[in-house]
Length: 260
Length: 313
Image (cartoon, rainbow over all chains, first blue to last red; front, side):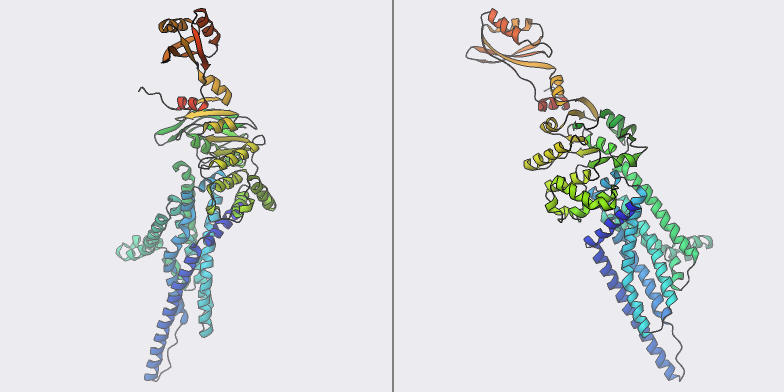
């Protein structure tokens, strides 16, 4: 446990000693902020039209739900932005150590491979959580001017966390396979895109196969979370996905000894 | 302290180590000597648990390096060829991190880091980024990293490579101070360094140990033949013939002629001192002796002779 903490601390601090953390955090906030503004603008425009229509027909304006019209799409946007941001967080984890051969220090120290992987994975996870924290501010603003339901926001964050955690397990695996950070980021991003868009293929596949494809599509499992539903089925999917990624990383890191 | 039993290593189809076998006793300083690509680094990496061996095994401080890898690693301090530094960390932070992963109790870490920085003389640099240090300081921090958990065994891969002469002397001093308390294995391709630092030298070439002994013994053993130079005036052929008749002399070749003196290069067996026989022969024949000198080979020559393949010119 102490070893994991030591590795975690070093890895986490290193994010902030290099520009990576600042760049990723800033970019994430800029892009999500832009989407927040855009979604709100579209929503206001829509509201305005509804009001004018209601006045024209001399009726009460229909009730509009801010959760459905602003918050749900916003969380969906978050999940897509993650596909672009997370490779930048995970790319360096093993690739850099292999390039500078500091991996030799880790592998000749009394550390187990599991400790090494967990230390790095948790550090990336911590940065990810820190990246999400400022976005709470958007919902505070909505809360001040509107009357959103709180519960779906919380479940959406839970979903986002699980989504990110399983995506980062893939990133960690790819990083352990190369010593080039650019390659790690590019391949990770490619895999993310495939895992996201594979669901689109389901309408062209047979009924049985479509189900499999839909199940594999990593974003599909996230949709229920944004609707305020926490389904153990989806949590189980993400956890087993992350576990599988970490297991493959374990095999890959063990094999570094044979490949150097 | 260290026992290596018939270790072989293959990378794909290429075998780089062939049945390496040696022992190191407690407190000894052992030098690996060999040209680049001889297998020194690979041997060290196997001992430190970084690489697995294809065949054979080894034990370090009583722990099998494959069965009890973690315990073995705990007893080793390792300085790889390039010091494994995280360039974005300061010297102090870096050493604290290494102290943690080497399993030092957390409340003793800062004390231990101070001690080891003092030992390698980097205390005044403790807040500098390791990436901004000069090569010599990087090497020192590398050394500090290797000895931070006070391991009984230190394995140092080319600890003086790439340093300037002053830094080399400093690092050598450091290593000298370490011996005694620690069992040290170091690799080098510089011979004077091996003679200076090591009690025993192991010469490796193309993945095989081709000699192992103390530098002095090695010097003696590897001479194989004693070489003498004699300068005499007199009838050349007769001199040559009578020199050849002396027991123990293997070969006589003519070297140079100057002012009617003839120079001869004589090779003789090691165990027999032929000098008195040579001088007696010369005086008995009433020739004049101008010079008689033995020249031993320096380790450098031995090394070259051992590690370069003899090729016909």
